[in-house]
Image (cartoon, rainbow, N blue to C red):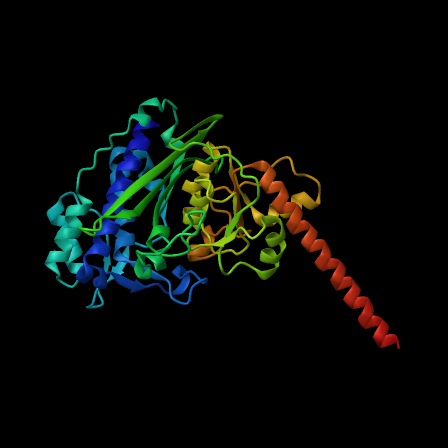
Length: 395
């Protein structure tokens, strides 16, 4: 496990370097945008962009991990297709080649013969990254790699990566509602037999910018949760005196209204599923709720493993509300990471029932109780309205 974790951390740092490079080089950045379409398009956004940065990051992680752990090569999945189309209409498969020169040549074809851009990216892809982290020395968990799968979200919150500002001011609680801070590299490892997340890495490429050089610094977090062993690079945050929740600005009005009274005004909005879960991990909020079906396995797998390592969890929002109503609230309906839907494209990997991420069980119970009571009130109001309509008709 320590070797796999070290390899994933190294790949995530290399990935962060690619993301930073593409944002810092304006001429390079303008070349890297291609709009998604069809079944690969996330229906949540009017415009959902795939960047070459996404594809390069996904493929470099796939390459580096597959090279060190050949048994995982066929079980590394990600958000992006590695098919790219250049200005001539040629369809090119992006991959990391054996040498930097070969990778640069392939990128040069994708980038319409922009040699300088191709060489910059190839150098970043083939850079040797060595992780010096004493905390990794205490990792002694043995994990059978021949039953593992990996999910990669190369740049979560791509819209913010492309358009996001670097000077967004955080809230008093430290939450960034938008901007580059919400663009993360997410890597999750899961058990293919159970579907359970077992290892997670979150890399923040845009934590701090040097005011003089304008270069960005990154930082990473990791966690392991396997067969009762839980190890994390972060401490478990203590529960606060109140309740705070982060959600998408597109969250349903019903859920926002149900939670506002129990949160005392501490309801925050932010971009990026991965970033919102990170807010729970860091203790900036107590929970993240999203009732839509536009988060995916690659969004939640890595953060889920870290949450579990700290004693938290991520559950299917629809199912947890159902089991709570039935009184069967002992066994939580956790998210799992195998395919269960018969959909096409990205929809096959969607978290269809929505998500609820939390650190402390008592907060889960408060939230579900509030949502359940809101449902009951809405149901009673609907019955009352129907009765009044029938009474009017009879008169």
